[in-house]
Image 1 (cartoon, one colour):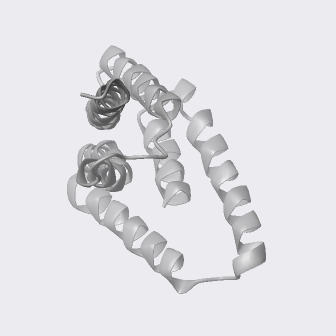
Image 2 (image 1 turned 30 degrees about the vertical axis):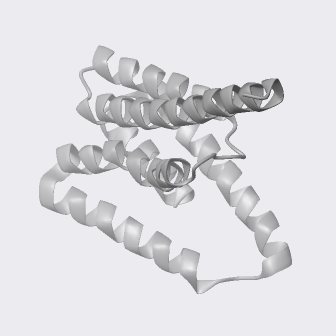
Amino acid sequence: MGVTTNINWAIYRSSQELWLGVPSPLIAATLYIVTLRLMMRGRGWSLTPLLAVTVWGSALGAAGMIGGWLLYGTVLGASVGIQITPSLIAVYRTRSPNGVAPAVWMLGIAQAFIWGHYGWWHHDSALVLYGIVGSTGSLLVLLRYGYTQHRRSLTGALATEGV
């Protein structure tokens, strides 16, 4: 899905003449392709990712045909929520989440903020939406992780003091 999403971001940004925003999704798509290629070396091909790419690509194409660039961009802008939602669910369903890399989520906030600001500067609602959804989702993950780490340190301190 990362390949499909990033290629579509490049198409969208080109259509809106946001030229400075075109290279990064093309680089990301290339890196996703390399990563997928390396993963498939050991596992082989699977129909599940191919089906997901087909469905997602079709949904984006349908959005563009039905609502033009505005709906196409809106779906792309909101799509970061699709990527963040599984992590949000996991971090909030787990009593004490492990394996959360705070630096990754801080980078997520920074990236979303930068794209949101770029979109605001260029009056592009799709990028603004991406910024809002991406930074909010990343912040929610960090807040939950910070809360659980704080509680863990408090309960650990209480246990060592014999309280």
